[in-house]
Image (cartoon, rainbow, N blue to C red):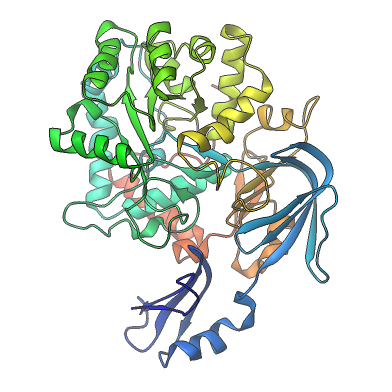
Length: 495
């Protein structure tokens, strides 16, 4: 049941029977601009009773200020203040006027925009690392290996068939948040027989391909899409992609192309082009096989590149020629692929990219790497007006990292696993140091985990509907049943 207030659709109230109380009690969610503001379990009388008794007056406006070193859209500002009202940044800078009685939280680290992960396969991230004996030529080679079926495809299918898809997604999103990502692509999706099986993705990270909270309350209708096998889609689907890009109903399309180092992988670019996919709004994921001529064509057509160096090197022994891509003025974003062969999260992948740059692309400087995880993926996702920078009017998606190195940006490039101090999505603090999370939430609402020796607080019960330990135990049991163990939230040693 859904009620919409008279405030032009900005306030949404969801009601459904509470799963543990039958019809006598109902579970309510109050949404404001696509974000859950309050949840409660109440006896069903009327909407006004819920608003006045269960929610109270605090839902109308939620504001606070963050003070510290902030990487703003205009540059790094020491002793800056960022004023957050509901899910957006109202002001940020050196001379922000904070309203009386607004809580100000001083952070010792560096405040960055939330990182944007345009390439992942989230439900797979519950599985431990998979290692090939030696690199292969292209993705078709490792996908045909018997081990791929026994180690990955079979267990994944069994868990999904057993109804654990939502548990896998939620675990992977917390893993992504711990890695600094506030927006992700590659989420658990609908099925032909159950178009709402993935309603569980609402909340936590922004699922840009399923439910971002940036375009209203309807799930599975985002103007961003991705195809892992774009050359295998039907002609009808291919036409729908082209038509959507032409009309701008589809604002961004991500295509796995050129994943490998052989001629077959490189040929995929010509096949993609023949299908009419060399089109503004498209970004190529991987592009390992591509060279200068292809990058020049991509730049001329407004096609971007999503770079996943860790997984590429693990599987193929090499990665995309990023130097040539940048020289051709291709817009490049960094993303982990998945933790099975890639990195645990965006911060880990950023360290890999920086190390690769020091060896193979000397022109890849800190500022470029910073842009590749913030403003550049926002641009490729056609979301530069909403995420990817800290500026007035932007969504309040940000992370705090401990200071490290010779510059504030070094805190991002040189971060260590498990050290993220605060992760906020749409103004909601979801993960971080207990001392910070307790400023946003009651300690009784928090869960605690230890990651690489660092104790972190989680504010996720509102999204998963239960304590974190319950979800983790259920997921571990399902994995044990198929002979697998649950991957850790982060790999603590570089590999």
